[in-house]
Image (cartoon, rainbow, N blue to C red; front, top):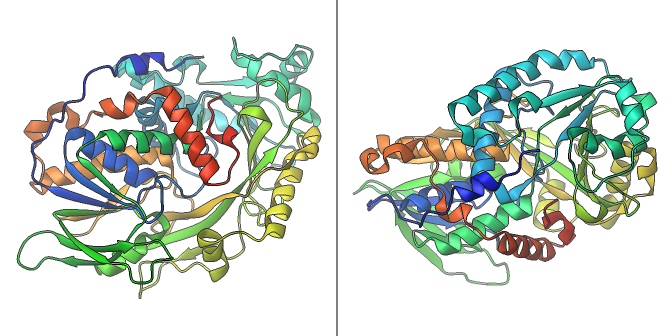
Length: 502
């Protein structure tokens, strides 16, 4: 298994801003996209203001997976998978402390219509692409050796692994399959089973890195608990007037603050349509409300990979996903209407508004809290969904409120997973990422647009127009990242184990 010391060792250079620019950039929304763009720009020396409605950064829809190849999605095209591979490699290089280094096991139940061999052509393309990227630049070797990107295991191999003792560290890829072989009902699966180097991504550690780095960057001005209430394009000069007010609910008459910016980036996630409407920017998009669930399984022993049992989305046999964290905690997905998906949870924009309108019951879950009975029922349902393949998992218990949120999907293709950014006019961009690993691509696209608009000098940027320059972000201390991540988990009422590194 390849570890990320080489990435960390290459980031010891002292911070030096590269740009001398008078441009003022506003980023509305401090999620994965907004925070990443703010870091990308502020590390370069751009005057960047990050406006976030909530009290802290990166607090949106659940993320747990890097998607280094898109292997969780059979329904998307090969091109999207190759894009996700490249984007994930870039993400690992910039945020190494947020990555949980463990592979993913993908298994096809006997009830599934597909065959394991169907996955092979795409996997070969992904391995070839990864090999090509490593050949171009050895720093891209963040997923292990290209030849080990994936491997299939037969029933006989798994039966042999059942007799081995559990281990606390992995010397070989097969060590990740010992607990799997001992606990999964192998008779319910088709063979071979796939092991692929798709790693975990910790939302809390990602948030911690973004917060710590922004605090150290003089070019980045963070405004939390701040809500945008109006945006107007300046008539006498280029740029925008952005009006904000404190979003703390107990303030009866919050003061409206007006600020001028040369360029505005809409990174509001599922609320992006509200900002589009303020600037009369038409856009077709969808929004889908989703949830993942947190379970505790104290009986858990040994090393656990992420496990995905394929299934048809939206049916009772929808995909089951088991994501491990330290101390016996797991994040669970079940692509059924009773677990991760919701009836009427997918909505589209209209001719009148760029903002898709979720039903009131979903907005209440996002802005207020979940009914306790619903938390109980859906979490137990997700445990049962996993237990059909891992029978001993039926002893797991409800550990916390769900990880939830609404995910935007640009355009009209609900299966789209690789997306980054679109533009309106010269000085307004909207991020439209579906997966966290696409955030850097969005930042790069907007940086190129700033050059095209004349707000950034490409000569000053040099190679860093295309290469990523994150000396401050990459030097975040591991101990401080863990401490901040655990603090954020506690503040948000989640087990602190979700903030620890595997």
